[in-house]
Length: 113
Image 1 (cartoon, rainbow, N blue to C red):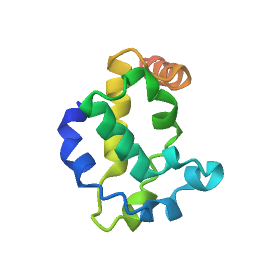
Image 2: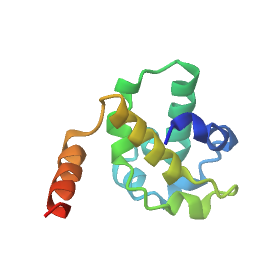
Image 3: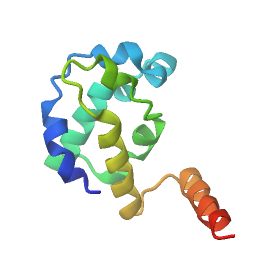
């Protein structure tokens, strides 16, 4: 998975903000950067070279990928799919979340038994 493959979804977001009403993380933190629309803005800035991958880890891992944003998105954009692709690329670039990395490692180890 490469984030560039999801550029079209990132570009389709019109930043209407309807996604905020359904996001459990945004409701909890009230941080704009935790809303789906702002994640798309952040990822757009990343693809344009205005941000570095190292600056994104915290925000991208705060998303639960519950897809609630997709239910209120007028365009039905797969925001969770974009976030998952961005997380995969974060890991490939060495910026993965250490806790998530440990969980994944444990799952791989246990499944080998």
